[in-house]
Length: 130
Image (tube, rainbow, N blue to C red; front, side):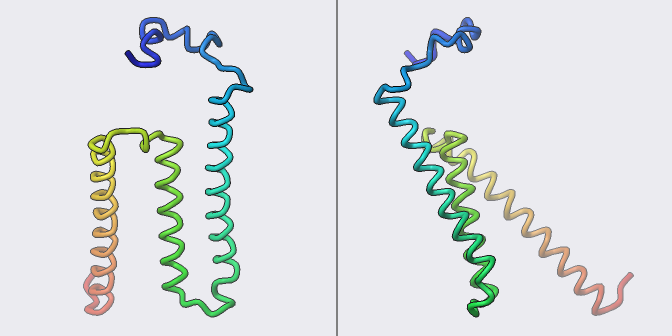
Protein backbone atom coordinates (compact mmCIF):
# COMPACT_ATOMS: atom_id res chain seq x y z
CA UNK A 1 0.00 0.00 0.00
CA UNK A 2 1.46 3.38 -0.97
CA UNK A 3 2.23 6.12 1.48
CA UNK A 4 -0.55 8.37 0.14
CA UNK A 5 -3.19 5.73 -0.62
CA UNK A 6 -5.47 7.04 2.14
CA UNK A 7 -5.44 10.45 0.40
CA UNK A 8 -6.69 9.13 -2.93
CA UNK A 9 -10.38 9.14 -2.03
CA UNK A 10 -10.42 12.45 -0.16
CA UNK A 11 -7.73 14.85 -1.36
CA UNK A 12 -8.80 17.52 1.10
CA UNK A 13 -6.83 15.51 3.68
CA UNK A 14 -3.66 16.59 1.85
CA UNK A 15 -4.22 20.15 3.00
CA UNK A 16 -5.37 19.45 6.53
CA UNK A 17 -1.89 19.50 8.01
CA UNK A 18 -2.18 15.99 9.44
CA UNK A 19 0.54 14.63 7.22
CA UNK A 20 3.21 17.10 8.36
CA UNK A 21 6.06 15.86 10.50
CA UNK A 22 7.92 17.29 13.44
CA UNK A 23 10.55 19.79 12.30
CA UNK A 24 13.05 18.30 14.74
CA UNK A 25 12.64 14.72 13.58
CA UNK A 26 15.47 12.85 11.91
CA UNK A 27 13.51 12.63 8.67
CA UNK A 28 12.95 16.41 8.55
CA UNK A 29 16.60 17.08 9.28
CA UNK A 30 17.60 14.71 6.48
CA UNK A 31 15.32 16.55 4.05
CA UNK A 32 16.77 19.93 5.08
CA UNK A 33 20.29 18.52 4.68
CA UNK A 34 19.40 17.32 1.17
CA UNK A 35 17.98 20.73 0.26
CA UNK A 36 21.20 22.43 1.39
CA UNK A 37 23.26 19.90 -0.58
CA UNK A 38 21.23 20.55 -3.76
CA UNK A 39 21.52 24.30 -3.21
CA UNK A 40 25.28 24.00 -2.74
CA UNK A 41 25.82 21.89 -5.86
CA UNK A 42 23.74 24.20 -8.06
CA UNK A 43 25.44 27.26 -6.55
CA UNK A 44 28.93 25.92 -7.21
CA UNK A 45 28.09 25.06 -10.82
CA UNK A 46 26.53 28.52 -11.33
CA UNK A 47 29.57 30.25 -9.81
CA UNK A 48 31.88 28.25 -12.11
CA UNK A 49 29.76 29.32 -15.10
CA UNK A 50 29.85 32.99 -14.09
CA UNK A 51 33.62 32.96 -13.46
CA UNK A 52 34.19 31.18 -16.76
CA UNK A 53 32.01 33.72 -18.56
CA UNK A 54 33.74 36.70 -16.98
CA UNK A 55 37.36 35.56 -17.15
CA UNK A 56 37.47 32.78 -19.77
CA UNK A 57 38.41 35.00 -22.69
CA UNK A 58 40.80 37.17 -20.69
CA UNK A 59 42.97 34.18 -19.68
CA UNK A 60 43.20 33.07 -23.31
CA UNK A 61 40.85 30.09 -23.37
CA UNK A 62 39.64 29.24 -26.88
CA UNK A 63 36.01 30.06 -27.60
CA UNK A 64 35.15 26.45 -28.50
CA UNK A 65 36.46 25.25 -25.13
CA UNK A 66 34.46 27.85 -23.21
CA UNK A 67 31.33 26.95 -25.18
CA UNK A 68 31.92 23.25 -24.52
CA UNK A 69 32.21 23.92 -20.78
CA UNK A 70 29.03 26.02 -20.82
CA UNK A 71 27.08 23.33 -22.67
CA UNK A 72 28.34 20.59 -20.34
CA UNK A 73 27.64 22.58 -17.16
CA UNK A 74 24.20 23.64 -18.41
CA UNK A 75 23.30 20.05 -19.28
CA UNK A 76 24.50 18.91 -15.85
CA UNK A 77 22.39 21.55 -14.10
CA UNK A 78 19.33 20.78 -16.21
CA UNK A 79 19.67 17.05 -15.58
CA UNK A 80 20.23 17.55 -11.87
CA UNK A 81 17.21 19.85 -11.58
CA UNK A 82 15.03 17.33 -13.42
CA UNK A 83 16.34 14.52 -11.22
CA UNK A 84 15.82 16.32 -7.91
CA UNK A 85 12.95 18.78 -8.32
CA UNK A 86 10.90 16.81 -10.84
CA UNK A 87 11.65 13.55 -8.99
CA UNK A 88 12.81 11.75 -12.11
CA UNK A 89 15.67 10.23 -10.12
CA UNK A 90 13.12 8.32 -8.05
CA UNK A 91 11.45 6.71 -11.07
CA UNK A 92 12.14 3.30 -12.56
CA UNK A 93 14.54 3.00 -15.48
CA UNK A 94 11.83 2.47 -18.11
CA UNK A 95 10.02 5.66 -17.07
CA UNK A 96 13.26 7.64 -17.27
CA UNK A 97 13.96 6.26 -20.75
CA UNK A 98 10.38 7.03 -21.82
CA UNK A 99 11.03 10.68 -21.00
CA UNK A 100 14.67 11.06 -22.06
CA UNK A 101 14.62 9.31 -25.45
CA UNK A 102 11.92 11.56 -26.99
CA UNK A 103 13.63 14.59 -25.45
CA UNK A 104 16.93 13.58 -27.03
CA UNK A 105 15.24 13.05 -30.39
CA UNK A 106 13.55 16.45 -30.10
CA UNK A 107 16.90 18.15 -29.43
CA UNK A 108 18.38 16.34 -32.44
CA UNK A 109 15.37 17.50 -34.49
CA UNK A 110 16.02 21.15 -33.56
CA UNK A 111 19.74 20.88 -34.35
CA UNK A 112 19.02 19.20 -37.70
CA UNK A 113 16.60 21.96 -38.75
CA UNK A 114 19.01 24.70 -37.66
CA UNK A 115 21.81 23.08 -39.67
CA UNK A 116 19.52 22.66 -42.69
CA UNK A 117 18.50 26.32 -42.46
CA UNK A 118 22.12 27.45 -42.20
CA UNK A 119 23.03 25.34 -45.23
CA UNK A 120 20.12 26.80 -47.23
CA UNK A 121 21.21 30.36 -46.31
CA UNK A 122 24.78 29.55 -47.35
CA UNK A 123 23.66 28.13 -50.72
CA UNK A 124 21.29 31.06 -51.25
CA UNK A 125 24.07 33.54 -50.52
CA UNK A 126 26.63 31.72 -52.69
CA UNK A 127 24.43 31.15 -55.77
CA UNK A 128 22.11 34.11 -55.31
CA UNK A 129 18.93 32.01 -55.42
CA UNK A 130 15.84 33.99 -54.52
